[in-house]
Length: 177
Image (cartoon, rainbow, N blue to C red; front, top):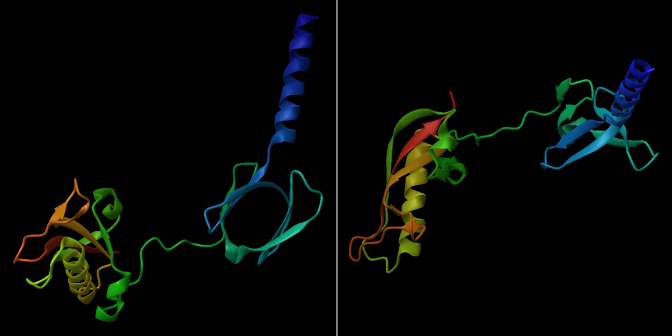
């Protein structure tokens, strides 16, 4: 009798786990929801929320990934991690980072430099000017990211400023393969 009871309990638990399994949708915005997928069309996903019985439609271009309850993952829209920098005109797109983890998928291009004028009166103004020059230097190389190596005060979280000498920032430019 106890074997039958144990087997019945196991089947009962497995049934409820299967009933509780849900699909998950990850949107490009970073939000995710658990849903019951009703239908998958070429450009649209039809689903219902677990708390609602209405069929909802969402364009796949707004969805990054669908995680199905059976473990399958469908990538709907590739998320571009790094900006596309084609030349000097794209200097505003260049990202400056202090974290080496941010550049692990990129290849090193060259050292870059950015200086402010000597007459700037503070680190903020000089830092803006130096970062702009640094980004332009990297953009001219087609690089999308800069890892700062010198000229940054980590404790104060701002550029190092030397009176009469302005701000000098140094970094290494990186780009995608």
